[in-house]
Image (cartoon, rainbow, N blue to C red):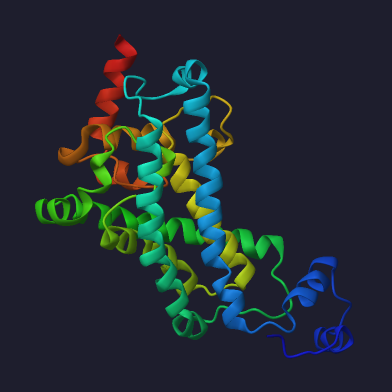
Length: 279
């Protein structure tokens, strides 16, 4: 809830006129408790997961002849029932893990310094914070993912996620409930180190969700704009990790490729790509 009750008070506190975005934010959030604003992220993530992943599922089921042209593992074709089962299982896991986590973590978020008031962050500030969050998430997530591929971690936790050797968008957050929590934790580290505005926090988690869906999509589209992001792994990079499965010691990074390159855990993938280019 913002400390100012009127737009005039808010502008007086800012020492300037509010921008259009700030006026809209003031109108929406002025009388809303901070906890309710924070809880927005739960329906946001569930909606983004549903819309982003279902469109790819419908594309594959509704236009298989076209979809197979871009599918990384075209021999693997699932039934509508399999798609539905994955969606229902994943939503159930999200509702019993991610939703309560976000709803209960509000005190920690407030302590970290996530703010809801004015002024809104500039585009440059938000972009710089997002870049930092991506780098922190990728580095920590890389090492956690490697630990999950030790025998105990894989057999007891991560094995469920690898039930899909040919990943698909619906299976991006599919996994053991503890796997969902463990691999989701790095996304909260960046905002804890460099606190941001709640709108940036929303944007960060939504983009992170879309990125996970993209890397698990199972498709390599030539018109995907992510090909212009430096060091971005993408669907083809992560698809190999699932293709190898339990014994994979390659491509642990979820976002970029430099951690795997620096630590030598991309050799299997590079060999695989080299062999494919020879055929």
